[in-house]
Image (cartoon, rainbow, N blue to C red; front, top):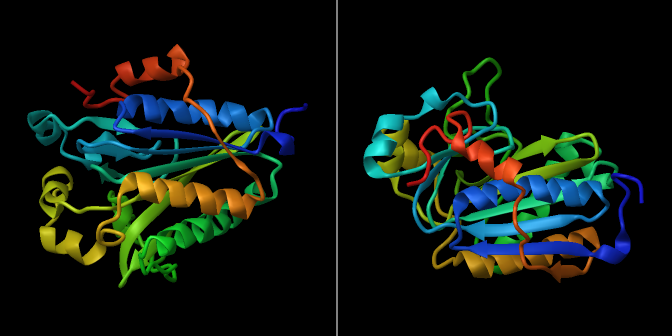
Length: 260
């Protein structure tokens, strides 16, 4: 099978990781892209207990207080998708990889639309009253270093406050879209790491809904994405990640504050 061509018999390969090492989950997104390039759409749903600060692929590490993170033992890591920073602690990360010639992947905006529709459906199934807001990013305005402060096209919100943000990574033969879904909020931690007031954080961010558990929400996301793609979910045990993708997290570029 040529790279990028869909293998319908493969279904949607699904990997779950709840409570595992964050570096492994981040590095595994490269493996998802490789599977998709071989014609196997792949989905990963994961969550980590302790707080971790994630930078967008091109975001400067100076956007956050690295010394405060070191003092608190909070890792600062970089993901392969674009966008800006987010703090995850018991929240849900969702990564979907598709062949580059899949209809969903034809345009950046189209991939956001189809993915967020399925994500919103999953959240609604779990009782979250989310909506897709109209973009509010003013032309020429400096983008916030905090992902959840930017009300752009790649978002879901509750009562005008952002609960989910997305970003993409595009390769020649495959594409990946990543979402972070906020299930809790420590505004004081955002203030410490990003140097903004708790009031500003509380006005912009909100958990997706009460009593949402990452594993249960992950199951709902798997169901709605598989249904939207017209593919049967195929759960698989996550294989070892290639050393080249793990080793990058030994460098300051990918791990400005590495895990202890």
